[in-house]
Image (cartoon, rainbow, N blue to C red):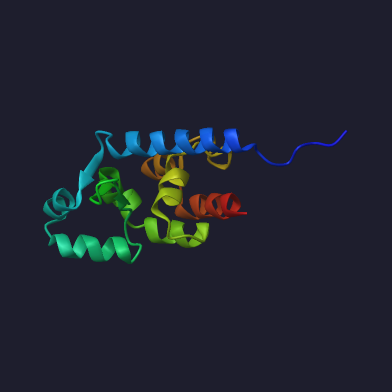
Length: 136
């Protein structure tokens, strides 16, 4: 008896549909703001926010209509200084992977999400270690 290592075409299609639904829902969540709103919040030009997104300084997620949406909480001091370091530890610039890591419960952080751990004052080194573990 051999174990099947791969999902069927139907299973793969279902997973992709589920992921698309999650992304659309997440983009419309109450904590998501536009580039213009982020610029106003930080008192900078919208072009500065776009530069930060493209440089990996902050998380910007493209919606189906092409606009960028951003989690507002990333501009809190606990997260703001950590986003780039976390991305490097994860080995990615993909905003969805970074967001997923930050919002997923992490056993290495006593079951907290990395975002909540940072908000509660957990040392950035512990969160970075969790990111490195997650990347491997």
